[in-house]
Length: 360
Image (cartoon, rainbow, N blue to C red):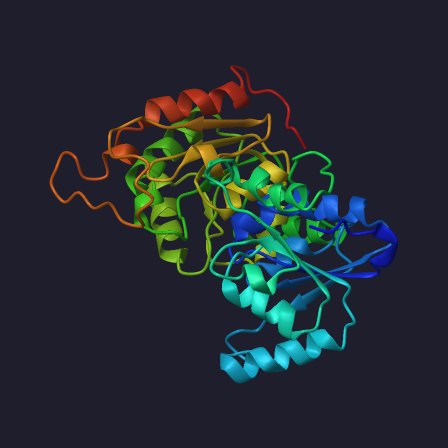
């Protein structure tokens, strides 16, 4: 594999991952691309729902939307995208996304250096094909993405994930909280009961309700806010109504950028394994993460302010979107075995035994 000379690289295309959490976990790799090619202008090709992750990043010069449900839909749309990329004059493509399509687009776009894992039959489309090994598959997702650069002989510069919230976004977050009826605009407790992967990743809603009530009793001065994505508004409304008190529902009522700015205002974030979990981790917000069917070896939060709760059961991690066990009491036991008492105990290690001041 030929070494890439930094002085030869002026414009770089990075094909982003397709999920919010994966996009967050790829930020150390993007930072390393910046350091390896300090003269390179970095453009990130991303689907619309993950593109906001890269806004305000000092490591990204431009975000290129990959509108696969619009102008880039179907084979003709891909050809249109390739034509648009070809006009960009890129010197290097770095593929975070592992699909055959990602390598094909880079090749058809005429990018002379194409770096990525040799998966999905795409090795011949890559000039710098990094072999996939069993060890790589077992690494944390952060290290898995960094492995693309390591396999091509490039340096890495730490594994800390990062997100950036602008001053204007902070002001808007405060306005959203006031409009929602929050008693204060900082030091909130965030509850994130949803998960895009499927129902198997969700701690039962009734557990979030009991947790919210008990946190409200213990820390009545800290507003509780329910977070979630599109389609989870009803879930959030139900939890808000059942918890009562100062609980507000933000689920499905914010953009992703607004959600990031709101998470930044949390004193604590309690969450399932999800994209917002990784966002809170990247923002250095204390978090308690509840794991069940997914593999903590590869997707657990990596920051020092995080606590992961998991009850080992023989069938976990199954990596299935819905629990395949239909009979009680074994149905969804990986999540139902996590007690409210245990989550509350971990939460209180962050909230402290006294009222205390806010982090922010």
